[in-house]
Amino acid sequence: MNKKIRSILLSAGLAVGLTFSFPTTADAATYTVVKGDSLYFISQIFLTSVDDLMRDNNLYNYDLNIGQILNVPSHTHTVQKGDTLYLISQKYNISLSSLRRANNIYTNYIDIGQVLNIPTKASLPAVETEKTEPWQSYSAAELDLLARLIMAETESQPYQAKVAVGAVVLNRIKSGVFAGTITEVINQKFGEYYQFTPVENGWIKRPANEECIRAAKEALNEVDPTNGALFYYDDSTTNTWILSKPVSIKIGRMIYSY
Image (tube, rainbow, N blue to C red; front, side, top):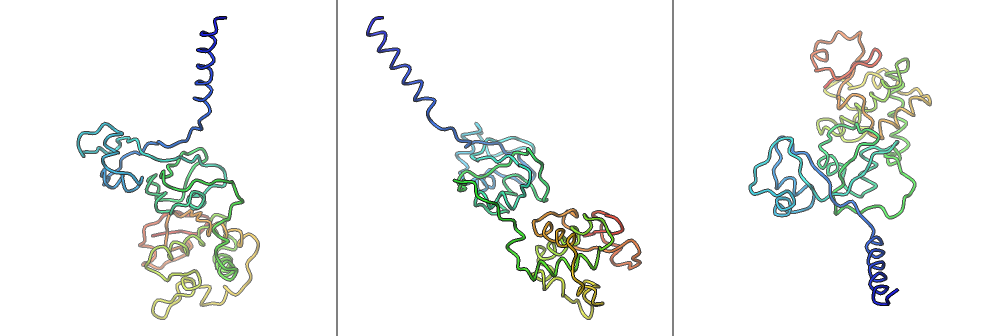
């Protein structure tokens, strides 16, 4: 074979080899515009500029339409079994609120296989390490107290009702309307009345069983069957004030409301 031709082919082969040797990274994703969005707001979510967003999407003005799909600079994460929004935010070193905004998810429900946006400048995990669950950041005393409340309120009710009682306590902490810790919320009084009857009648002093402890851990892991409820009661309640609250869900004999 002609040496010149062999040289050209060799050079081409090296070029192809070099081309395929570079790693590929997922640095682009899409975002669907929702009511209230603006280019500036979206640029802040994805740590970019309005000019870059306009260039990447061939936009010539600032107008956006609800449902419009935009290209955004973002890594992505495919939800796997055992994932929660909290665990994903910790894995990528971003705040839970940033993860919610980047995906317009304001509940705790995600599906296996769902693809989530992770803003590009977030630190990607270098090595897969053993996951630390959110409940482990709470003290043993807080876990025990929450589990005992669940036991006192829902001992004969379905497991999801137990998780839901724990979720209500956590929702109260997040609301800013009630006290700021598990212990304070459970022992809180409005006027002369405790918020939770088992605190008043002493039932909360009974030790929790394994199922209630497991339900408490699940609630602390941000599982919320109530979708944000702040109150609960059973179906024998006649109190007109609590009955006037919008109902979120009924599980067994327990009703959860806002």
